[in-house]
Structure formats: C-alpha cells, structure tokens
Picture 1 (cartoon, rainbow, N blue to C red):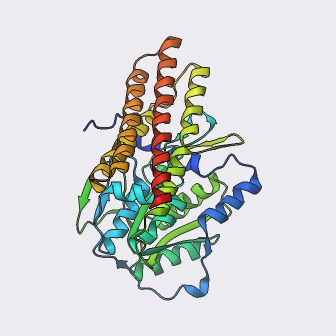
Picture 2 (spheres, rainbow, N blue to C red):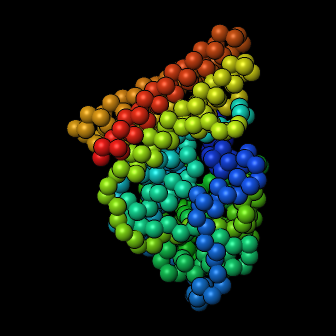
Length: 371
C-alpha cells in the first residue's frame, strides 16, 4: 500500500479534524447548543473524586498507533482492548462513522474528511458494550485529580489536546491521546499517530501536569467550548448488536447537507472543489491524501467484514471509486499547477468522488431502513 506523502502530515491533518467538525463557524448560540446536545457533557464533581495512590499504571492496554490520521478511532481501539475486544482500525472507523463523512466551511485551508469524533465515539461505544462519559470542568486541579482518580480505578483516559505542545512544535494541532498511568512527575500516555505500532507492555511517553493542563485548555479555548478541561472514560454498558443506527448514521454522514456556510458529507467535498476552481489554487494537499486513503480503507474493511453482502459490496465499490478519484486529484495537485485546466481537473475529480460517496450513502440508508 502506498505510504502517505509527507506534507506536514501529522500536524496539518490532525489540526483540521476538530477545526472543521467542532462547528466554530456557527453563531455562538448554535455553537454552544451543538456542544451540549452532541457531546452530552457531565460536570466533573469534587465529591465524585475519591482518594488515589501517588502513582499508578494500567496494565493490559497495548500501545497502538497508526501513521495515517486515525487518532480518535485509535484511542477507542486501545480502550476496547482493555475490555477484551480486538478489532481492526476499520471496525472502529465504521461504528464511529468518523471516516464516513466530511465538513467544510468555505475556507480552503480548513477542510476535513471526517465527522466530529466526540459524538461519533458516543455512538460507537454501545457496540463495544460500553458507555462513554465526557466529563468537564473549569478547575485545573480538579481536572488533574480526576484523571489520576480514574486511572487508579483502571479507566484508560482519553484526552483531546493541542499536540503541538507535546511534539515541541509551533501552532495548533488538535489531537487525541490515551493516558494509561501517572506518578508524581506527570502522566504516561500512548501516542496515537506518527507510525504504525503495536507494542504490548509498553511504557509509553511522559507529559507533565502543567503541559497537560495547558494543552487541554488550549484546544477547548480554540474551539470556544463552554469548558476548559475535558476527559473521556468508558464504563460497562448494554451491548448493541443491531447495526441499523450505524447504517443510517453513516449514510447520512456520506450524503451530508448544507446549512448557512457549513456543508457536510458529499456537499462539503463539492463546495471544497468549487472553491478550488474559483481560487485557482490548492493549499492543502494533505486533505486530498486523507480523502483518498480513508475511503479506500473504508472500502477494504466493508468488503472483508461484510463478505457476501451484495449491498455492502456495492457500497464498498463506490467508496473505492471515490478514493481512486481523490488519489487522481492528489497526483495532479502534487505537480506544479500553473494553469486553469489543471486546477479544474483536480476539482472535477473531487466532484466525481463526492458523487460516488453520495450513492454509497444512499445504499447505507436503504440498508438501515430494511435492516
């Protein structure tokens, strides 16, 4: 399989994932309403935090990471291992619906071939027999104590933060990491990106309390969320088997819609393509690359996991066609584009790919309605 091209890949791709899907471009009222409705935040309360030892380390969680930009689904993949569930990354992308959609707000530098990972994770959890809790606070000490408390109770803790502060880089790189332990000097975490990795009994990397506080508060401040700190834990819950909701959700994610200056799904890709035509330039090759490999990976997973299902096979072929269209757009865009024809060609391949995605989404909806 062709390895991802290096175009500031980690920082550039991940920096867009939340920047697009957090809907920071909506008026404040709708933005805040979205966060409360979609994230279902619960206040982290002092009385809920009991005592904890000075250091603790969770065992039984392998360090998994991927070179491709799958940080949020990788976090869920590691948590699932803790609960005895071993599935490929494509399974988590599927039940989350995270790579079955896109979002765009009319800025060529900000485009994401993903859906919002927080509600995606909430939706996916029951299919693992889990329930996700998104806990928030404005108190840094309570946040740090809460993380330590839950880790000591054997909860791997998912964290969204500005990873540039961990990677000693400039700028803003929203990202997902998994915390697996702590001591007096800080926290141990498993990096979810940069390389393909599966290591059992790994020590992981270290981050200080202060850097964790700054990196987490920064990501929430940048997205204008109504809290400074958030952590994610998963508890045992009822397990769902019926995939109806997943088919419907993923179908809607692919078909998408347009509202105000926001577009999602296929319309987002088409709007992105239209603006590329109008501007006569392409500023973010990484977006084209990510579009390509996410759709090709989705197709491969669907064909293998639902072997024998003709409807799914047809949808997978459409997603493969879409991925190939985006790959062609990428190859053209990587050359030195100096004429209108080349730019238009890139846009046309994007539009063609979006049409394939829309048709795949219709199959998903049909499957959900009859499942």
